[in-house]
Image (cartoon, rainbow, N blue to C red; front, side, top):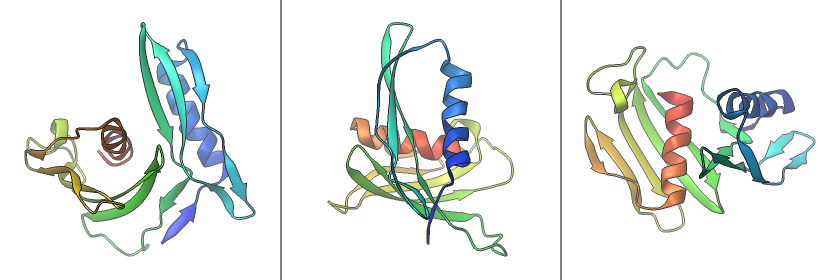
Length: 147
């Protein structure tokens, strides 16, 4: 179930980017839309870091997890640069040699909802690595938030 993030949660996401890249030059900011229930749709922050341009996506909604669900599986949906992606991850409490970059995610699938094609797949090793900027941005978001 989609749950809108609060303004404080959105600002916290921006603060994480600012703490890591606070001295970077800002090229552009994506616009934010809102409803009475909260913010919707992820927006971007486009920065110049050490002479290199990078874009970070700040999600404005998150998937709601059942409170008593202690399953290692999570799934969700996010929008990046006009594309909607669906993701499924299997993660554990601690990182391992089988996790992405030694992290907690041992299995990950990301699909482009419009095409229905898998754009990322990791099952204790890379099967499909991202080939587009939006697929890479989706992977980066999942890693930041779940790994």
